[in-house]
Length: 108
Length: 145
Image 1 (cartoon, helix red, strand yellow):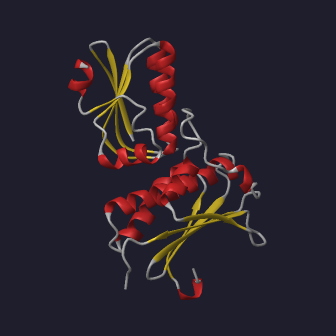
Image 2 (tube, helix red, strand yellow):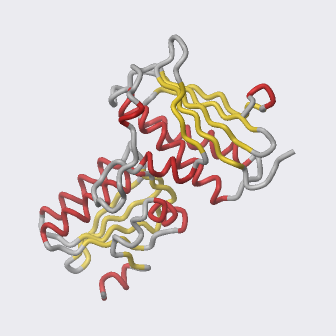
């Protein structure tokens, strides 16, 4: 997995690439929570993620809860079919704010 | 499933560590691709086995990275059977339950995924020298030759 974070407008965009599993999900969690602790709204760009397991999903759930507690925006962007399948299996597809593109997320 | 009539597709021993999961997924994907399974079937099955192996790493071995596990895959004409064996202390399988999904919190999703994807999920009584044996089955989308 690769993770790159950039600032765009008021958002921290956490862009992930590759497969997210138990090995790398702690890094994802740490980065998301750190940005939220810095009071930055977070968009997680999943458009280049080909696989995610429950540990990756758990990191995103924790991010969502952290953001809600701080009244900050937190959304997922560009989810591919294989990754959406996991959100549906865990019935979390209706829980997260999701956008097709960064442009849509930032204009919403 | 009668193992005497089943064909063994995979017998993969691996270190119970997070950095082995990608290799495990590749082994499973290759085996299922060779059967002509659909991409969705392959992805879901890989995910369920990844979750099972993750539980072994986290809960059976306590993230110590100190131990092995074995994944075996068998098939009959209609059904796949997966055996995941570890050598950690035996876990109380009554304590392993999926959580309610309307309770939004991280964790506890792996068992739910396994039960959603597989037709059966069962802990078997381990043989001497074995810690835990998880057996899961899934019906193939169409019979194979």
